[in-house]
Image 1 (tube, rainbow, N blue to C red):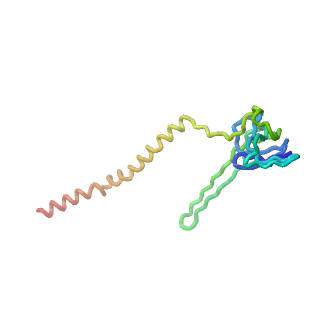
Image 2 (cartoon, one colour):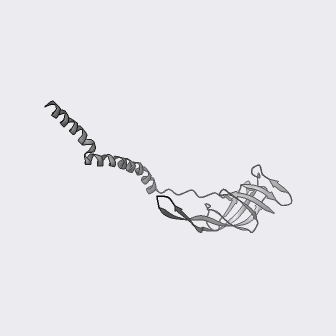
Image 3 (spheres, rainbow, N blue to C red):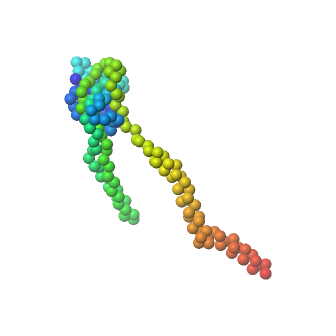
Length: 169
């Protein structure tokens, strides 16, 4: 018996005993999770979901939280710019082993549903996001202050006043 499940925006064809690397799940090593988004079941009979098969689930044991291979993204702007930039990324993954495929009765098992991990927001991050608009406002005022120091905007009224005084005399 095999099933097609959906997790992390991808679809996987699985059987009992398969080992998969999926997008990071909110579970620790050794826990059992249940995938409720089953698109198709195939065994004695084939069942297609519209879009999901009702009551079906796939249970899996979390083996470990790992990182994928490094992906290097090289950006090169051509023509008159001549700038280059290298960016690297390692995707966080969860290694799981499929233990059981349930054709029905998924709601009654009481096993934790497999969900992606939400990003953790620390309190210090929240204060920096509030302070960010204030920094932008000070940067916007800085060029105007430089112009005033140069005398461009402040000198024009003085010159106009001097010329008006000279013409009157």
